[in-house]
Image: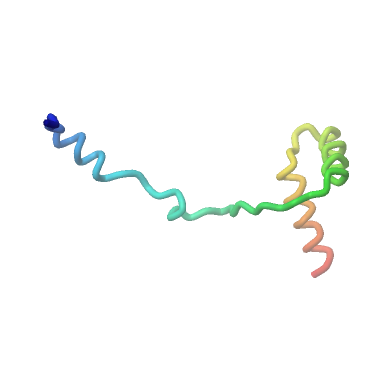
Amino acid sequence: MAVKKKIDNTIKSFIDNGADVKASKDKDFKNVLIRIPTNVLNRLDERIEKKPWMNRTQFIVEAIDDKLESNY
């Protein structure tokens, strides 16, 4: 026979309330999966070493923005 424990009402209401669903929150960013050839990625890493304050994502986003601005 199973034994049931009483749960305090505040704990039960907390559990029932749950958390916000991550997907339902407004986002300023969207994750995108891209495939980059290894030799291009190696060149990218070499450039980033010269700019230690920048990471791959920042570099790629900046390059995309530059490309969009120059073509339109």
